Image (cartoon, rainbow, N blue to C red; front, side):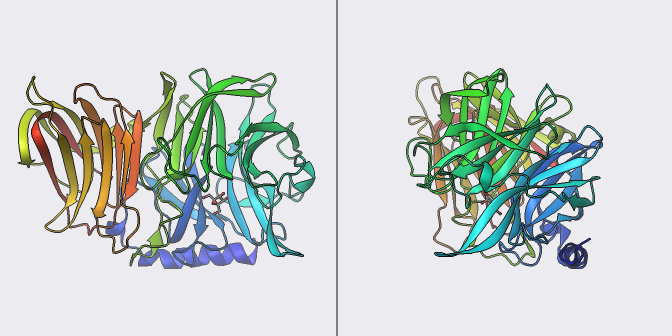
Length: 492
Ligand code: FRU
């Protein structure tokens, strides 16, 4: 084991004791210590789910990337394992960037990741990115002697070797392997490259699977590609997006849905949409569960605001709740994994609560809760003008979820959620609603809120910093609204 890896393992084991368990989210994964960004190597191996992550154990800020590691039986309760790989080789000394994992036919676990190294050029020091392999048993991983397995020489003409990263691997029915990776053209425009291999070690470029043509941001990070409900689905996280109807500016998320011909590896786009409409969601990755579910997990943060935060905690960054994906009516739907039902504690339920103005309901409170709410007008005649669900509330703080029936808009507002910074605190999505009816499922888990609208047709995710003692929940309607509500505590 390299010195960098053994030092990191020793450090995280000692430093972990400074983390107060009560200050961690319940079902949302957080790093063992230090900094976390993208999910990596999300896979099912030897009877357990494995989650690796972009990890800088030594501080709560981004630094030379390691792969942190954890396992779970239910995707919600995770057990930290020792850091899996460290930046300890010539080809990855500047970082082990994002990548993916799969089980080899002989039972070993393969990690495919981006190795970053520095190179002196006429224009200063540049990062060179190549794809590399590490193989292990679910705890210890050894880097492949033949690394890197895909580099500059294999790139299409004009493609950048500085932006070539985040391979997502899968195995085809014929036994061969594929990966997609993010890449930039000479003018910085994003494209997704498709590679293939017979043995997962010797790789060759097949083609540019999808090109951005300057439509959605610039470089596309962390692509994922799979077939779901008969459709080809490409997920990517574009950088430098410009806001429009569907997308917000900055680092965003993109889902392209189309047809995929596996014989010719041809993907034809039919539609595009954002994956998450909230403030904090990026770089999602999926796995195929043994029962056939396509499950996605994402980094519940964003690059533009992750460094303007105040936190006394010795860890930073968390994952979204894992979400079951489906394609319905040409759209990507996301629902929290069904395993969450097994962690449901006491239930509080109200039917047909008709109200106007402020409303509180006995037993509806808490900071680790799963709320299902179905909303409609309180009188047959007239539409209410606005509905607000207010969570993480005390005298000063609150995080608000608004629904405006006339515009059919859901908006999240974390202005009063403990941040001392003038960063983005509000975001909204146009949703489908008829005559003021909408369904909201809200997962509140200590420092985050995820809102699944209309059974997962739209999702908005955000983090909050409010002190844990702010656990009030209340409602407000401008006009007469009616709702059914079921609340479960989330119990670990
Ligand atoms: C996405 C990303 C990836 C890269 C990693 C580095 O958030 O920028 O493209 O591999 O983070 O930590």
